[in-house]
Image 1 (tube, one colour):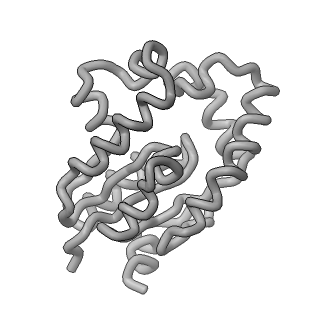
Image 2 (cartoon, rainbow, N blue to C red):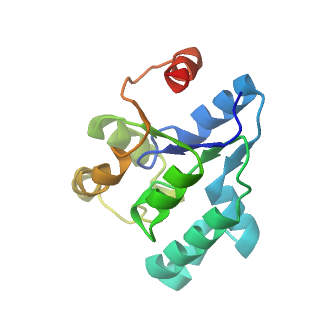
Length: 168
């Protein structure tokens, strides 16, 4: 029986929200999307907040909202950078179980290219710059992501396989 949050982390477009919703449904526990919580808190999109206030202010807000989430059985989809700032990694490891959805840079670049406008960190990048950004940032963030309790590094792992992994 699950009594603590399962925090899903990974790069932008790694499937945290989609996987999180399916996992929560199968486990019959709530699903929380940290980005949605933040948008409710500020009454605007993260993109709009980011554009006006910048990344530093966003990371402060993100950390505050993370710590306000209930520490109970739930699947929580984190933002791509959440574990990398403000001692958030230590916090989530202390409060729950962590799961890294590891995807190849090529897959992430393809997904981000299709939906750049919705991603404030990459919205204005050319395709070439997007590739460089993903590769560079993924290298920087993986030292946090790889601290996860479990790593899902298969492109098409099923929810049942993820549940089995969580049982181990």
